[in-house]
Structure formats: C-alpha cells, structure tokens
Amino acid sequence: MTLYRERLWAAPWLFVATGLIIPATLLVFAPISFAAGVVIAIVLYAAFVVLLVGSSPTIEVTEEQLHAGRAHIALALLGEAVPFDGEQAVLERGQRLDARAWLLIKGWVKPVVRIPVLDPGDPTPYWLVSTRRPRELVRALNERSRTTAED
Image 1 (cartoon, rainbow, N blue to C red):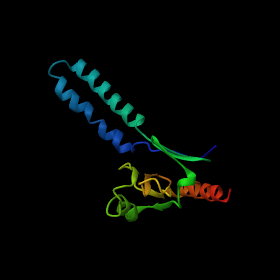
Image 2: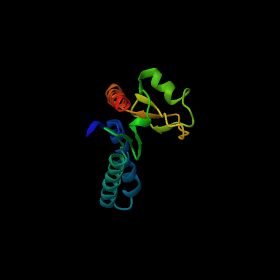
Image 3: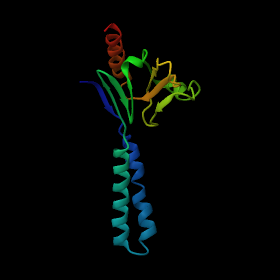
Image 4: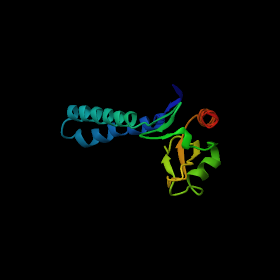
C-alpha cells in the first residue's frame, strides 16, 4: 500500500525556457530551408520535453520502503525525518551538507527533507530529498517508522 507518492515534475518555467530552442534552431536552419528548420525545431523541442518529463523522479513511501528515484531503503533503517523550507533548506543543500549523504535534489524544488539512515553498516549518514510537500512526506515516514518500531 502506498502511503505517499510525489513526482518531481520540472517547473513550468523550465518548459518555457527550453522553448527557446525553437527560435535558435530556426536561426540556424532557416537560411538552408525554412520548412526543415520548423520541423527540426519542433522535433528538438519535443525531445527536450520528453527528457524533462521522463527524467522526473518519483518519491514513494510504502508500508515497507522509501523509494526516491531509483534508490530504495527499508523504513526500519530510517530515523526521524525532518523537513526544511526556505533559508533552512538552502543551508541543508549547501553549508550543512555532508558529502557522504545520498541526494535527490532538484533545483526547481526548494523544500527538502533530511532522513537519517540508522543502518550501522551503511556509510551514508542521511538522505536529502527535494519535495514540494515536505510535511506530508515527513508524516508518512515518521508514522510508518513508529509503527515499524512498535511491531
């Protein structure tokens, strides 16, 4: 059963910004063939959109595991998750960041959640995950961690 699920879609401004490939492509190909330039511009823009959508990672909390992008870890191996927003999130992604931490950070998603890893055999001290709904993710992780600890 899924307790939490979020897809980290690219920000709308990123789709608009990649749209600048259309006039750039037209500038290059219009002197050769305007029709070919239009077709190539549309194909390139479509390819970038597919890349943006296809590379958007998913964060999912099930009853047993946390999945963040391609990585996953058992909830029993996680400590209390902590949400960070605003200036605190900037510090977590920068000055306070441990180089050993596992990261799923997207520049267009400001809030982050720090999730301690309690496994003594794992050199990773914590996971730092970007999320648009940090409190919901923390609630799903911490409630399930408490339930797992009580079992």
